[in-house]
Image 1 (cartoon, rainbow, N blue to C red):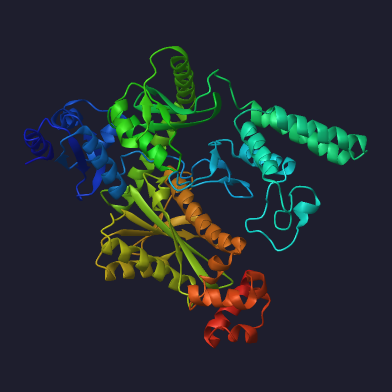
Image 2 (image 1 turned 180 degrees about the horizontal axis):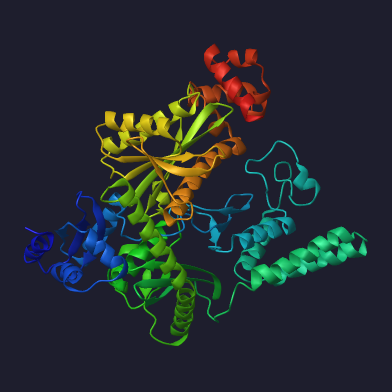
Length: 591
């Protein structure tokens, strides 16, 4: 029976009840998860209508479908989101930014601190949070200005003696001085007032300091305060637009055209348009389902859920029940006008970028088809690429990046600390490939269509041996460089050389992946080195766990002192072999 006839027969059996449905490709992999009030009507809509754009690509990719009936629509939404998290289907929404916006945090400690934070757990965090700040520069400047003007505590752990901040009047000396609580309360109140949009007190303080410095002929300091005033007036005030109401909420609006949906988010804090965020995504189903999934994923990205969310004409009661917050649809007045403003912004954004997105999609589609034809495979949608980095031939780390339809899927990126005995790139590649795909087997993770290796025949052969030993069937290609260290050809897993046009879309996208995985692995190693934290550094050395880490800290007091220690001194705490590994690693870090 042909696929379309099979699907038509199966559709006849689908009930008209709510539930979640899962679309599968020819390999049985779930490529899309959706929900519906009426499963039969929703599933039929995919196959009886003429589809275009990304929906057409989805339908062409569907080989079968399944569904799970639920008793309520809320249950179907919960099930849909759960399955999306589990399978990460290629046609569901992938938000373009894997980072959340920062917040400014004023701690509730006895001696408060002000800092920038990300990845907030709203339920566990009891501190005062302000934001989010889509303008990260504005957040940093705000924290810097407040910390310069108000003598808040600067150190994370109270020191034993007065530090530099005390001597330059930017700390009250909480470690040694008995500070009146009323002074701290007054500082807190003024800082909170400023972060809520009242700039009067802080501007007056800066003007006073500027004039005082100028009168003392300290013109350098006066200029510094003048620049801080300009930062407030330009960066911190003009990003906000008053809407004459003292409420905190997030507002979502959208504009759709030609299978594209442009979504605009406004952050309203204390009646001010505090910041905004936007995304353009391609539709594969009705806009209500897309917007609901988008909003849920938006708050899973560590955005704090406000007490009120304003949304378009979607099922706000269902969303409210899921997010456990008030969700409203604007009907008239101020909220309706604000929604119209956000909608206009979404429209302008789409009109500006739609042509560019369509051109990029066409280039990616051409590259996908070219790679399929070159390798003679049915699909080339999911590519996992590997690279490693090291310090002078020792202490290897590895990175894996994942691309779907030549778009990065950063949720699937992985970092690896490799065996400390690894001393060459080939052994590093063996370990990377084995660890990744052994885990894929054990945890039943979907396989990629292609594994991409940065290297020639030898590297591809090694990777193929590992994949064959695991009884997996994944196409492997290497990107081979010429004598000038420029990529010029593909090596397939039969060790054939396939030349590619350096001006082709395929070459362009493969080069992007090659550069991305290279930078990802190097950045991981640099971060380990630059962080310089005791735990991060020592964890790289085989034989050092939490117990020995504590013993080293007890003996030397800090990472700096451990780095300065001789091999003989380290051997008093660690076994000789482990001490030598640590000694060599720390010396390599400092080169």
